[in-house]
Length: 302
Image (tube, rainbow, N blue to C red; front, side, top):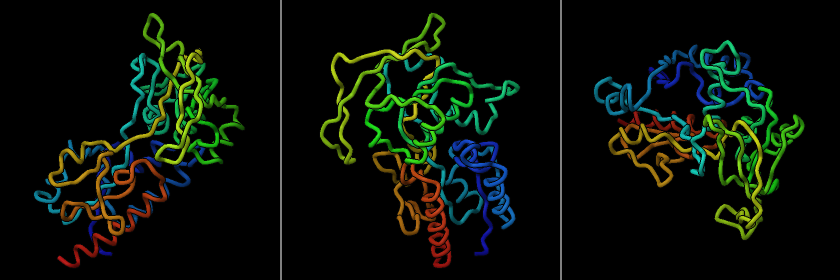
């Protein structure tokens, strides 16, 4: 459309969740992602890495001091959730975000890495979404006997059926209708086991899925040396807390018009996981295109 466009990327490599979140075996980086990034660059888009908006600079500074006429926020939902159960601070407990980012972006799977990740003997992944499947399949490739622990039945697994099937084919063990209640550490502070409880399914909750209910006295222990929490994510509050007049909802997501991405702050548009919460790449791409059209209309009418 003829505008000068610049992307500010918090990490040292462009590509976002396509690069740091999705493993190579599911999305080839050089063959697919890098090609897309080079295509964006060839259009004339400038990309500045290692720039954390909210720390390095702010949206207000971009618009008042640096001369930007409009800003699009597509910062995703990278803040992991935890269960807050006893023992969750033990060494060997990861969020799926950290585990995947270190493996995918930093090459931590290699012993030659400056920050190598642990190669667990037995890993427990808590959660049932696509990210849980990615973390489980990554742990498996790093040599671990891998268990997925999920509090509902297979029917309620939020991951795509294809991802579940691939995980099963690779030998990942599914402990369904099971929920962790405590993580145990050895005398050195490293994970040695996790206590879980069996679950039953009650009445449907607000999501339409049957609510999991604990079965009293059904606790059991799984020995493991690594626990990966994959319980979903929410947007990092850094941008919303440093931008005056930017409305967020109770889930800490930025409130934006679905049709054009316009937020409560004039000239600021948003889309993707920062608005919807954790969703899909294709929805984020659609939101970006809708917002580009919205930005053009906004600037044309100024």
